[in-house]
Image 1 (cartoon, rainbow over the protein chains, first blue to last red):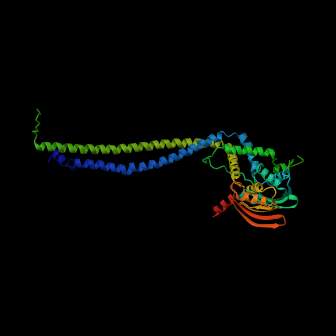
Image 2 (image 1 turned 135 degrees about the vertical axis):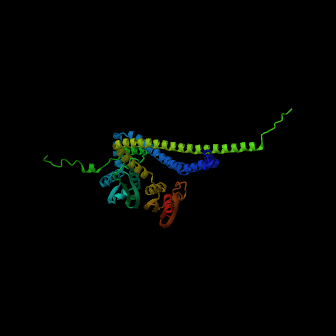
Image 3 (image 1 turned 60 degrees about the horizontal axis):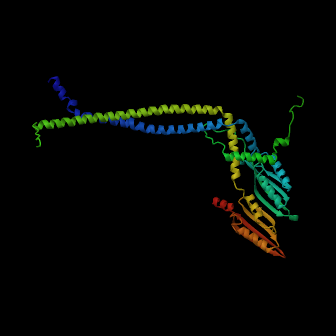
Length: 231
Length: 190
């Protein structure tokens, strides 16, 4: 048997038209099963992650734009304005000071004032006033309270008629405060710019504080002077 | 005149050529399929490579933006403080104040000759009112105002006359009134 006979009888030569398609199909299936399909699904999840990163990046760019436009000086002024509306602590003297001013302006007579200070978590506490005067004065007081710089709300109102058309009223007023947060959130946290409506609120509070004097604890306690008088 | 075509090749030779062509087709299709699979694999690898480059670019951009934001920490603190407080003020100013609404409504609806002896309103906007007058027509006007949605701007849901007494010329009354918000609160609690 010579070499040409062996080659002609070899397995590959005999079945070459059958083996080649089988081999091509096998390689194709292996590629499809172990490379193409897994990589396709993997690329889909990567694309999803890329989209998330892109969105996050856009938020960061937006945040950066907002922060770049922040004018520190005007922001400090606006913060001082909004801190008169909602102070960082309970600041009871300031609240009572404002109430007394409004009672005086509205020609009501104060009989008693009580404070029920709750916990800081509630971010509000109640003032209970007993006043005397006519109904129009009571209405004036309620109107002026709405346009006073410190945010307060009448939550309960009762009155009874006493002598000469006057009434004796019990007014419950909710006074708000909000401690300054010690954290500002993560860098990735998106922010929304100050809206026109919010800017208008700041303007309004500023105008209110021009009509009703803002009494703060600092004003009440006054200058403290030197801690060591011999220095 | 049509030409005659006559195939004089032997039948065996013709079938051999057919078989040979079929075999060539099988081999060509196998090679084409294999090339197709390899091409697809290369495309997907190329796409993965592109995704990798894009990912590293985005990560670099994100890091740069984060660094820039960190550098503006003072401004960020000021912004958060202002925004947080203004948001709170805004939310408080949009809340309805039932007590003031009730008081203003009653003082608006009550006619001049009707005196209010006592008035109380709770947080949900339920009003208890007692008063007196010596004019039946004024009292009638007042009750009309309470029950007519056009006059009370639809702010009153229900009015209940608790008592009505006449003592000489004076007519005394007690009414309880529910405002629109009071009903809303009750429904939301259920």
